[in-house]
Amino acid sequence: MEQSFRPMRRFRQALSEEECISLLKNEKRGTLAVIGDGGYPYALPINFLYDEAENRIYFHCSREGHKADAMSNCDKVCFTAHDTGEQRGDWSYYVKSVIVFGRAKQVEDYAVKYEKARAFGMKYYPSMDELDAELARDLDRVRIMEITIEHMSGKLVHEK
Image (cartoon, rainbow, N blue to C red; front, top):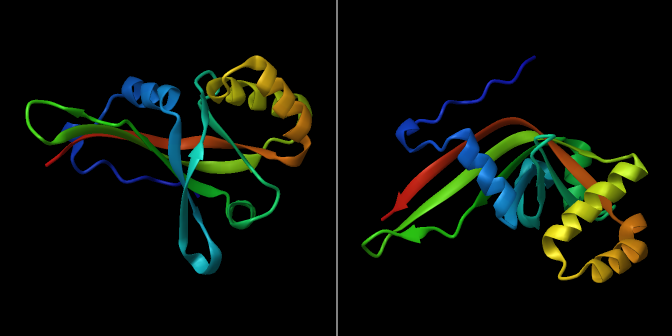
């Protein structure tokens, strides 16, 4: 059964696809939401990498734990990223955000896992030497996950 997603109610505040992609490419952190224990939502901040060519989001997690167990039980996820906002004349902020609905799965191919982990690390590590040392030490112990994007929307909100 094909999933349908609700249209944005406040469509005049919608961001273009290009603006959504820009947020995903440039922001360093987002919030991943999964269906956790007992059917309760479980949302947590994560570091992530957006691969524009593949239109996928990548992140890492341990082999065990609440997040890993939740994605093993249900691959449907929601991911949100937002900027820090900007003031335009008064005390209030204008904030851009993007919400992604998709399905998460573990990257199984070791060469792809290494490639995505390295690209991911280049976004965050201060030097290639530190990144290469981290990959050599820990890559076998982590899971690289990918979110296949099924629906994406963005919004500009005036917080006042």
